[in-house]
Image (tube, rainbow, N blue to C red):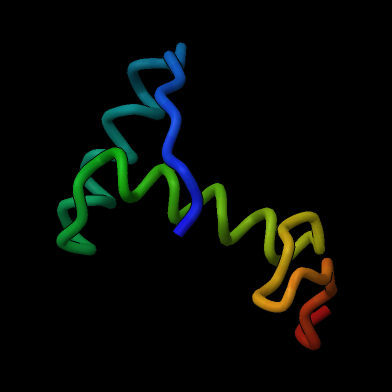
Length: 61
């Protein structure tokens, strides 16, 4: 697993509240939900290294 690093995040209160509700719906912590959403966006855009070390686009778009 990759090393975890702390990063202070400034975020609008409306976005934070919406993320908190989403996290609760998904039974995740707020931190885990934010990371999940970021990873999903990076994966879909082909910007996150896939297992095996290659960047790649999904077949869904």
